[in-house]
Image (cartoon, rainbow, N blue to C red; front, side, top):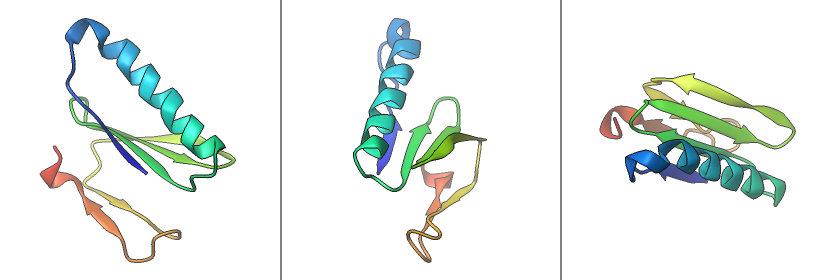
Amino acid sequence: MIELRSQSVVYRRRHRLQVLQDKMQEYIDNGTQLGWLIDRKQRRVFIYRPNIAVEELDNPKTLYGEPLLPGFVLDLSQVW
């Protein structure tokens, strides 16, 4: 699951991130095995997996789908 955080109304920015984080956790709770929440403006990625604390990456160049998606690489240069 990939979720991109859009650059929505400024006054709702913090609220919007929390809503997306809750949504990603709900996906994981309902059986999704891997979730990437990509925050384009802050160049951060939150990685969600079952039974593992959420991992936060600052300005990564790539994301790897291993071991769930062998060989899958997401090049974030096109996203930033």
